[in-house]
Image (cartoon, rainbow, N blue to C red; front, top):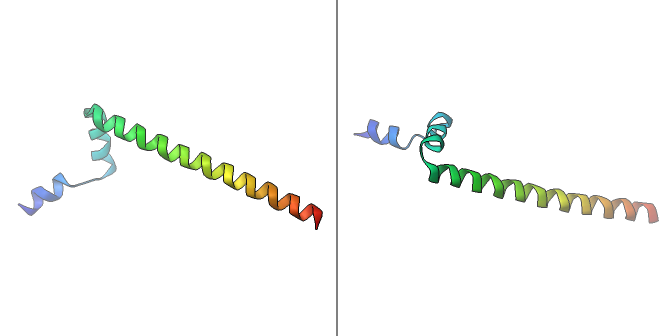
Length: 62
């Protein structure tokens, strides 16, 4: 019984890949999550660029 639960709850990369290939809703959840991660990374990149630019400008005036 416990073995069966462990197999059902196994979230290994190979099982996730099978889920994504076999189930369209899993594929859309995966693509939505990857878009959110990409969007967050892009926002962090913009924040880093702004902070970096401001620090350089501040150092030029000091």
